[in-house]
Image (cartoon, rainbow, N blue to C red; front, side):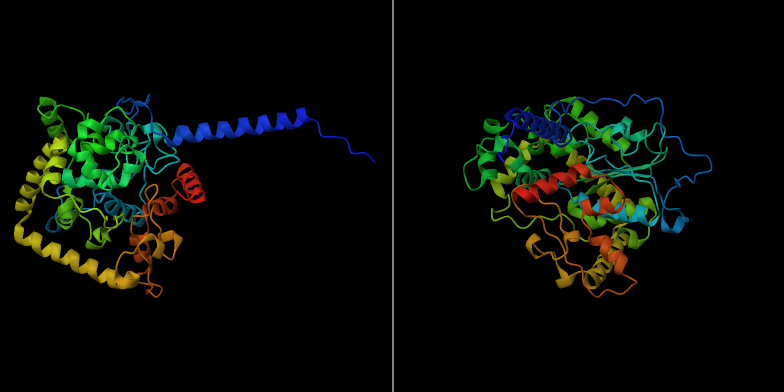
Length: 423
């Protein structure tokens, strides 16, 4: 019996159909994963006239002045403007734990682990958003848009953020994000950071893809124009606007002191602010910025420098008002409690490289092309009193978001592709 040959037209049609479907899928994925072409354009959700409307009889977070001697009530409505490379992932874990413990309502991104950064935040980007919906905690990466954020929380919500020495932040951002900033690809030396700082204007183009990561990143994250002339009066206006809107600006370099002030502001228990350092980078083989390079990095990020100097001064005024001796006592108490939990929770007592992490649930997200972010191994024999707290304190951001019910299909698909291609 002679077999009839396959019809070439039918095979071609099937191939074209599959190709069209695959192309459509890639375009859809691209629209979710790739930042927009115009991240500097802010817009307002069409439901701007429908702000957060609490359900009748729903408990409202306490707003009186806090302090252990004042019989305060814990604050539960919190906006954390999560800046990049400032220990913000550690603070995020603290907020995740508090919200989970008290069954609070989070405003999560839809599909990703950020609110379509670097585009401006909009309420419509929140998972399961409905006009008038109220949330207790907003804490994922975004480009800040105050009016849009304010429309999701009750009046009296606490606004906080964290900043860092701009030169150190620039260094960390350059190493972490450099591989996804095309303008760095033309740098040929082993120490690309040093090469860039020798003549940054030669390489930098503010309109190029992901360029915002390499200059005045704090100003950008807070929603302002990161290319402003440092002498412009608008710079000081923006800084004073941040001061009016945020109840506390934490300093990464004084993280423990910042947490003591935060605990006082929010009227939380000591256990609520315990932490392990998350998303920390392995020491780079390239020396840290020092001397002339540090000076150049500072000069390159003058908007962030002005912002940092302002809030560094206001931070220490808050410390003085809190009391230096009291601050020293409470910092010591926090560090002692953290050390106690380290001995209970962490196998080996310290962070390890990605290759040494045994449980995939403890594996942190890595930058493209290099596994430089450290993580932890959870001890296998932890008593029931501490087992849940230990696991929550050590869980990386992506896994914790999933545990809390966030829809991360784009992030998970991107991770699958990276793992498959070994990026």
